[in-house]
Length: 303
Image 1 (tube, one colour):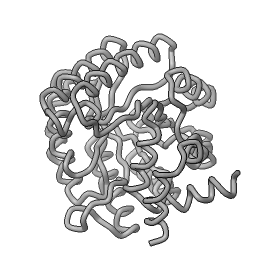
Image 2 (cartoon, rainbow, N blue to C red):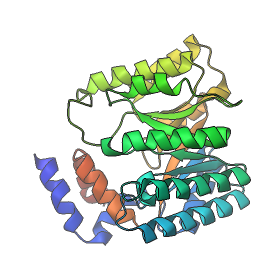
Image 3 (cartoon, one colour):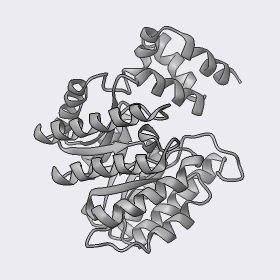
């Protein structure tokens, strides 16, 4: 209850105060900020996936603007030889306003990534978006096989069934490419597992299915229990190094990240940046009020 109250109040506090927390998890507002963080991570032996902030827009001009920014970002980052790729949220291209406009914007972005020999991952959002985002992936995969991937969320009851259907997609010479995360959005118990260990169990069930079916997996977690179990499955199924990687958020569990890298596993860090950082931060609070206690610690115990 206290966390929920804090999560409701913090969005109305000064942006400068919220930035004291957010700057640990967001590269900054500009492309230069994103490049600087990406270079630092590359120097640590870590690859990146860059994410421009700004989901859930209110008009299609914003979608056009976001598309043009992504085209510039891909051009700039690839020309700078950053070791990484790109993630995007379909809602920032009008997913809930006009599905066809959204698809055409994302298609243009993936085409740009292909032209630059890069890769785009379509993020998964809340339950109202899931079916549409899977449909978008189906269409993109058919045209851009090795240049596009998708996120799946282990806490959704439907995910294993979705994977079994996605497994029937033709490979066209490239394995299916997924990021597997727990999931952060607040969803009803009818469609999502709510208990902590239950989510863990289904994460591992999904991961094992993906390994068995020769899918590439971005193992996205900061949970050491899941990291340890994932490594056991990698050994059990003798998964080649080019068929998986671990993924983490910028600024989260750096010691665990270093441990994974030191053990010889590939690591990719999700780096968000952009002028919409305040909205991103406050939405994360509303979606997951448990974060509020960490913010209070960051603000008052870390200065």
